[in-house]
Length: 386
Image 1 (cartoon, rainbow, N blue to C red):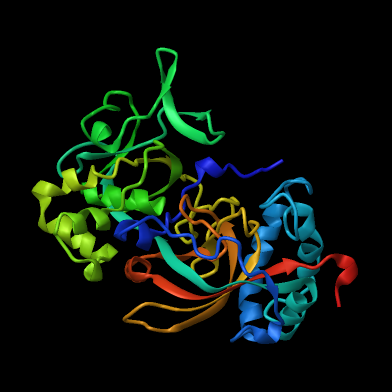
Image 2 (cartoon, rainbow, N blue to C red; image 1 turned 90 degrees about the vertical axis):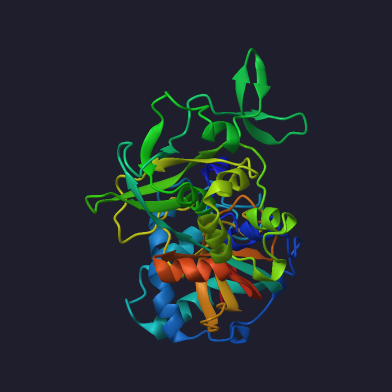
């Protein structure tokens, strides 16, 4: 039995890629799945092991509350069930805090590195902060909706679960972005709050969670609640097809700049993407933590990633070797944890890296579309540990 509600999580729908020209391409769907040695992990050592261990302990505290038979990913294979991780979780509690040598020994004892992809595609996502108010007025005219009570899930004839609504005994598509903008949900008391800029809402929906700063300075945290089930149409592709920009300049920043410079056309362009996201208020999440991911664990900047859980079980430590985009152009080698999923994160060679919040995270996530190596650390059966 799975304890993770896949349709109710939309984290970083490959923020860079879907804004640009296409939905996130599958890269290495089957995966290379080649065992490698820890010595093959460029940059691996005591310092990184010590820095990465607290995040593993945090997710272990969550896993410890689940039944051992709960599924985390594929039906079989190392790490597929909660019970596969519990021996390593128990061993991790004995590692002295800050002891890099002991932390490195722990990982190398309890996990086996497996090359998933040597040419993985890494995108990034973040928590935007936008201006908003609890009531409508002044510049705050764009509603942020909670999940409507009539948004339903049903199984299509091909077996897929789809979102929609019941109308006269028939299951029909849910309202599109254009219909919602035109007032399809008005008067139903679904407004969580109101924001100052429709484009802010659009980008908030892409990221799946965010922070709204009220006029008082108070921060309201929002998390993904659901989506209308309509297809996602990348805004970058729309603008290229309209001749508004060329492919080589498309980025999250350039798209946002175009929307700002063309207020009379912005709504119609955004409505060419009929997909719409609804939110929940995260009343109990401190401002110093990321929003909960698919595992229910607060996402940690630079330590959490969204993966395709059909290929990599949730909770898996994943070694990433890539670079950050310009202007940083820095080598990025570290251990992250598969704690989230994204609607369009598909295949063994795909991961969306959670980069935090604030201006720097926004800039990096918006430009992030880098390649590199992805190596999963799979749990060793207790009897085969070295």
